[in-house]
Every structure is written in C-alpha cells, then in structure tokens.
Length: 328
Image (tube, rainbow, N blue to C red):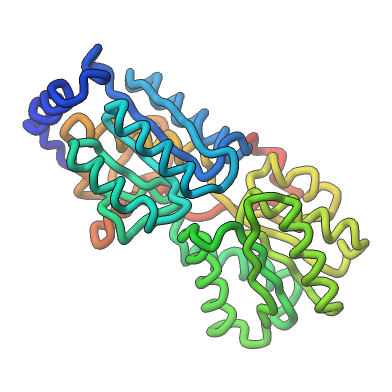
C-alpha cells in the first residue's frame, strides 16, 4: 500500500471552508449506514467499528433505518452529507436510489465506501467486502448438499430484491446448482419485507407446495429465524434442513434445538473494524494499491483492483460444534 499524504491538506481545507459543522475540530468523522438498525449482526459490526475508532482517534456514528426501507436509508445518507462527515460508508438497500446521492457526496470531497453490501454501478470509491459473493453462495449450497445429498428440492427466502449482495448470493447458488449439482431443484425464491414473520410464511408456503422439500435457505439475518420457526412449527426439523446467512447469536438457539442446521457468515466485528480503518486512511490522504496488513486484524486483507474491492476473508460456517465460540 502506498499513502499519498500530500492530499491531506487539500481535503481538510475543502471540508473546513465548505462545511462549518465539521470544522469545529479536526477529528475525522466516519458514519456507517446499515440496512436495518438493531439486529445482532449490525450491533457486532458497530462494536468492531467503535474499537477501531477508539484506537485511531476518530469519531464513529452508526445509524440505520428501522426497516429495510431504501427511502429511509437515503434520508440518513443525505443527513450525514449535510452534517459534513469526512467518510460515509453504507450497506446499500437499493443502488439506484443511492447513485445520485453518492455522486453529490463525492463532489463535496466526502469519502464514500460501501461495506457489507455493494453498489458497483455507483461512484462509490471502494467496497469493503466481507467475503466474495461467489464464495458465499457456493459455501452455503455445498454445506447443504453435504447434509441432504446431491438431489432434491430447495426453497430460498431472501430480503428485498433491491439488495444486490443477496441477489448475487442467490445467483451464485443457482449457478452452483446448475453446474455442480444438476439434480438439485430450486423450487422458489421469495423476497420478504425484512421481517421474520414474512420469512415464516414463505417457508411454510414452500413446504405446503412441496411436501418433499429438503431445505429452506435464508439470505439474511432477518429471514433465518423465520424459516427455522416455520420448519420447527411444522414438526419437520428432521426432514427439512434450514440454513442461511445469519449471525451465531441469532442462530444459536435454533441450531441447538435442531431447527437450524448451520449458518454461513463472517465476523462482522472485523468487518466494522476494517471499514473504519479504510475510511480513516482515505480521509487522511491514503490510497489502497495492494493487499495489506491491519493492526487489530489477524488476516491479510486482499485488495482486488479490477473492481476496487477490499476483501476481509473467506466465509465461516457455524454449527452446533462451534457456535458457542462466537459472540455476535
């Protein structure tokens, strides 16, 4: 990595003149906007981000919508722009909604990152990625096939169809099934409104339509509890596997009861830490040009210049055997 410190003075001066709210002290201000506020996954991400903020001496604020509502997320983004934050990171709900706002923020010399989910068609500068979308999709299906066999029917329950990362995971699952497991049939892909209740209903409907259903896969922490509850309520835990992208704390009870078989994810605290670290470097004139090490993280961080992705690492699989080893 190389750092172009000559840029620092120009960036700071631009913020001081144009944005009086940020001129009251020289502390770098970093904001992150999750897809939804309050769920354990984003709480863990905030904890890691705050740890990095304390070590780096920056101010960190996290605020998200109370439901997966793209308009509310946009309003929060624009509020941080108006307050003159140096760095705004966001896990986009809807890329198209955010595109103009991201462009306007960059015009004001604000560093704009995506983290946790991407908006590749926007002007965002870097995507701080938890794991490659393809690896996440492949891992979830591979782990499912290992348990149910290489044939059978699978239903998918996701969050909003505007969340590009989840669409990418679904595409990777479908591609993996087509090329590697041709006897796996994906019978439905449903999208919720961000609530466990809708996920419960979609999982129940999938089992009703397909009495021989072998698995239900949830694409979000908001959907995992719902699909596990649906299978448990139907008395089908021994016949229908449930799994998805869900934090250990959210999935723990279901995994231990047998209602959920496993979860695939990563460490969101590390993702939050890395997001703040990258934001601070860029706000202070740094430039990412190569893979690098970060004090406070064990793994080497990979940089993928072809699409400006900063990669935290490979997915992790949480099962009954290891779920108690994690607290997020």
